[in-house]
Length: 352
Image 1 (cartoon, rainbow, N blue to C red):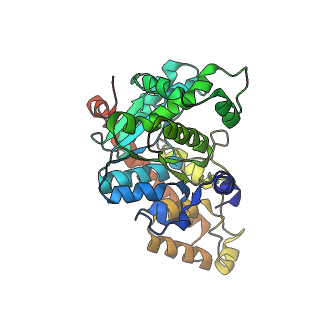
Image 2 (image 1 turned 90 degrees about the horizontal axis):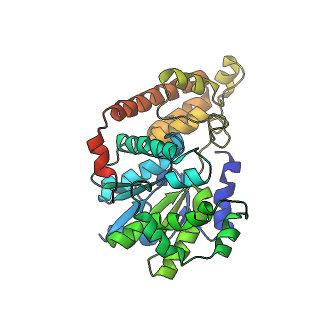
Image 3 (image 1 turned 135 degrees about the horizontal axis):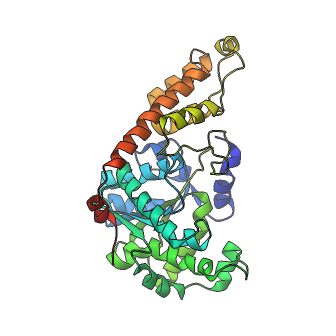
């Protein structure tokens, strides 16, 4: 993985007091932990100990309502599903339709709501249990704002400005949203008495959780635990982004997937002869990265890397393997999505 992608993760450890996962003696038997896709944490050991003692625990894991699911979501979703399936714990998923609107990521509240409903369907299609999953769309579950109002008294404008750098010409919705975010995070504890809450996030979202943890302490709640996931590289080896069009989306067709995979950064040599002689570079190859980190078990991953380094596996063959896995993965997801009913969705959607 490109070390430049870990700058934000490293900063949380060196500047903001997060602890590396490598300092923990025990890690869950989930590939996201075992393959090092989670970089650091805040109080995860406390959460995990409570979970194994059989105490009430929950996960809060938000999604932004300005697009559709992509391969960058796979690590956090699989982590959440591991805990839901292995321990039966509830997963609360806020879909930030209001933040998408006030920050200008969408043009209207109607657009944000439309995206939110589609995302909710995608989450159920991905495998979240509707009976143990609680999706919060703020336009629908408006009581969340009452909790946000209560929590807003536990934070000052000075803290928000120093954390986010907002200016006077920014709209007031942005200033208030940290209180809403804290309401999402503390919701299981405030309304259901679940004291032990885990929030898996990307390193760029840690400011939200630092504020939420501060508010929790001041309001008499237990501070939520946090996992910091690594940023996944896009198909070009750079940070994944819409503008670069370097990500894989779960709704991509086989034709689109083929084009994207063919353009992916390769670790192969310039000619087949040179590749057979010197072997490829698995650390540079994006198809290899995704296969070994997100889809294959340890034995298959080691065999793939060994063959690539020896030159017996060509770059084109590596991409073909990746393409086949993606077609199966995305195709299966899309079939499940097409069968999601409104009744299934209603089971998971929180309503007033």
